[in-house]
Structure formats: structure tokens, C-alpha cells
Length: 115
Length: 117
Image (cartoon, rainbow over all chains, first blue to last red; front, side, top):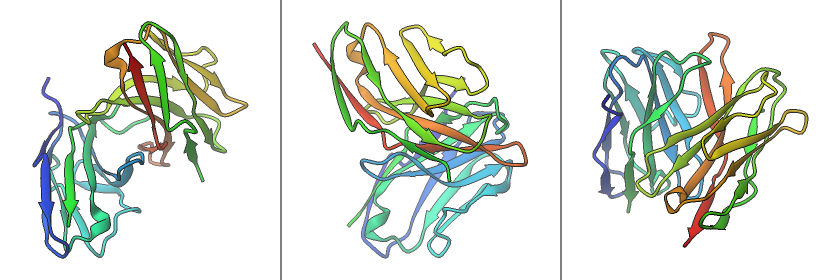
């Protein structure tokens, strides 16, 4: 089966600019996750969707970050405006139903550099 | 609050030898899952092994096995017969379960494993 797809793979922007990332989960997966992975740290969950509803966005900086999953399939994560500290790899993951026995599958990530 | 600690930022192992990566966690829950994920330089995270807390038997997957000490809240990963392809960042993760039955992971800071030829 095809894995989790993300684009772009790399993005360089200047601070205060806007940027958007796209994720296509594994077909049939109801749960989608966006993580931020700063260099030298483990991934941190930003937002979790169950179908097109938000399960957890407690660590999403809502003043500048937004995410949507309109039809319960693809998702976009937007940063507006970007700050230097947003430089990180943004990982998307999906799982079948988000239940206890589930497994998360990760995409290759988007490396964002903010200058 | 649940936390996951990996105290070894970097480890090295000779090819064909055995290495153990450490992980400790903090939780007040009695039933949970623990995971080890591998992240090669291409950055795609891959599940290595999972352990259910209510199972006393340590999980194994081919050359990978865990030493799960529930009372000590310790979850170490042992890689036997190390191969060059094992070189990667290894992340330990703890699964938090929501009341709805869905869950999320808390990741440690990772251990970079180098395999020497």
C-alpha cells in the first residue's frame, strides 16, 4: 500500500512570510497527526484529527498555526506569519482508527527553514 | 504529567555486536503502550517494536527485543547482531489514551545510533 505522502519536502522562507504543508494519509486511515520536530528533539504533536474533527490541538500555537482536514482525507498545515523558531521538520502521520491497538505510520516530513 | 526520558544522546556499536538503548518514563496509568521508533537519515519514522504494559513477556521482533521493567518504569531496546542499516535515530514513545479511546504519543528526545564497520 502507498505510504503517507507529504509535500513539499523542503521549504525556505523568510520570517513573517506564510507557508503551507500538505499531507495525504494512507487510504482508509481515519486519524491524522501533525508533529513538529525541532533539531535534536523528539516529535511533538501539534494537532490530531479523527476524520475531519479535531481530537487534540492543545500544543498548536493557534495565533499563527492553523490546520484543516476538510473531507476527512488530505490535510494542510499553515503557518502565518512564520518565526525563526518555527524552523523544524513537520511530520504527518496517520493511523487506521486512532484506537489503543493502532499503529501510526509517518510520512517523510517537510523540512522548514525560516531565515 | 507523562514524560519520556532517553539519557543517551548518542551510542556506537561495532557491526555484529549487541547494543542496548535506554528509556525511562513516568506515568500514573496502569495500562498503556510503549514503542520504539527508528528514524533513518531519510527521516521517515518506522515502528520497530511495541510493548503492552499489561503483558509481562518482553516483546521481540527478529533482532530487536525489549527489556520492560514496569515497576522501574524502564523500557530499553536491545539490538542484536547490529547491521550498518541499523544506524539511525531511535525514539522511545509512550502512548497516552484519551477518555474517548483515541490516543497520542509522547516521544523522548532520541538516541543516535552509529554502527561501525
